[in-house]
Image (cartoon, rainbow, N blue to C red; front, side, top):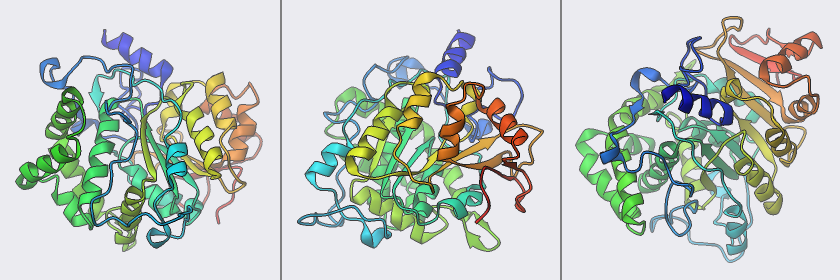
Length: 394
């Protein structure tokens, strides 16, 4: 049963990669996540249904809609327009913009054996030169590592996806708690055991309008993941490089941008399958409707687990972009120089699309092999663990 479910996830995948071990597919323990401290699946009696329903994870009238901001959020402007100049420049969406932002279908969640609520990728700062202050839309998989990149990008909109409904639920919790706490230290402390009752009450209030089944699942998810998430966030808030903060929690300006995005309704959480035919397609359609381009598309190491099938190629090809748009990925392979457990790579989205159109590039490894043959793979960037495809360092 385990093998069949893991195989299903590996074939349909939108997951992040497995632990740093060569034993895939059994080790589908999502790349960028720490298998030593992952959240185990609760017993069915305590965790709701054994498999998520076909509907999006949060069974509200509008399960992907951002939760309304607390009273201290900015009041809607008379005729707001999107801006990307940092927290002060983000204004609430108009009704028409909000409708467009939340339009479209999402893929169904995929049953998984273990729920990963943290990342073991620590060097996203290697991406910063290629995404800083670009504005536009951010698209990413997994948990809170996305906040660092969309903050550095000063994104106008963010689409956060995962195959696992528990990770989507976790993003719902982050939404509530970021809105409730105006600084990184307070947000981290909210996950500490001493504040468990207060935080649970905050979540109960925010999720009060959900049906009992969805609300219960979210609150059980908080109880199960709380300690793991707290320990992880303590590491994230302390992280820096060469004396400079490098995460959404260690840099107050980054946290302020993430919070402003939530306050203005610019973060969409959705189940998503990179090899599916709905979520990524929806992202492209929504961005076109809003007149915004995707400037960063972060896949972690998900590409290890699926081929570049037609639905993926079509969805990527349809993403609105510019010549500065980039794909961000991580790689675990002994042939690559790693910055931590992972090698970090940046590739222009235009180049990625061009290579996807050539059927010989049927998956990530042959694509990179042909890029190296073409002289387009730069492994000597001057920064250990960073490689570039068809790109020069700024």
